[in-house]
Amino acid sequence: MILAGLIAAIALGAPAGEEPVSMSVWAVQATQEGHSPKQFEAGLESIRGAVADLPFDTYRKVQALTQTLPAGQETRVAIDARYTLFLKPLDTDPEGRIRLEVRVELAPKAPQDKPVTALSTRLALAPGKQAKVGGFKLEQGELVIVLSPGK
Amino acid sequence: MNSCRWMKRVEACFDGAPADPAVERHTAACPVCAAHLEALRRMRAGVAAVAVRESVTDAQFPAFMRGIREGIERPERHHTGFWAVLSLTAAALIVAVATFAVFSGGTAPVRATEVESMSTDLQGAKVDTYRSEEGVTTVWITMSKDDVE
Image (cartoon, rainbow over all chains, first blue to last red):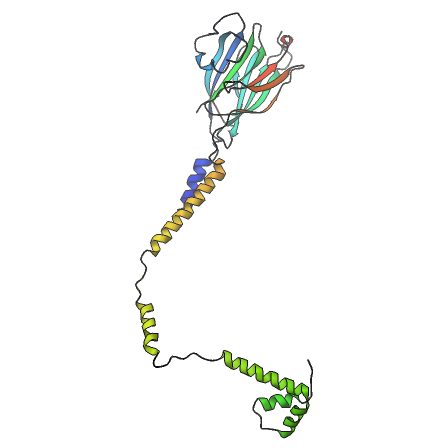
């Protein structure tokens, strides 16, 4: 009976570090064009709250997808010709948050140069909650990437 | 401890050897042997007091036997097993809950998203983090447009 209790407790409480992680990704071009109220391209309704604090009034979709990320492996997500997103789930912390390495790479200006890591960050993402990385310069406006782990 | 060469003979008389007037005279005159003999007498009296055996008299015997019979014929407690199972179950639950608390970090609610680290390789760029009023954790890079043009 004690052994069964122990096994059950371990099975319920062990971090799911080996499991793949479902991640929703929205990459948007955010610009200031004088619109009021703010304009969101179709399919971006679910990130209104995530970008509500930003000083932009127009959001256009650059990329939107839900990807299954294998644990411990870096998954490449092409955003546009300049930026590439890399996501690597590490493990799940005791609060149930997914620890995730996020890297945004900027393509080199010259073909012979190497890509530059514009941003590298490690997040502990609460399930069902959104987080964003942004500030990446575009020809017009800035690139904002919203991340949301599956529940 | 004081000693006297007559002590062995004093002990022999004390242990029941035939009476020896010389020993008696010496014991009366020698304080060492007199004290030794007194100590031997006290020791014998103490041992005798401890070694007194309890005995059951004829008048006490019926009550004595009745007590034995009651002890033998007392019905068994059938709920002993129930309490043992209950105790074992409680112990298993405590172990399971404690183990769950250790492996799951207790019953702490899921916290907000946190930024563990952030950096950039872009020259002159700066990275900040903040949490918006909507509770959305944000990592923001301030970079030059020259980086992309």
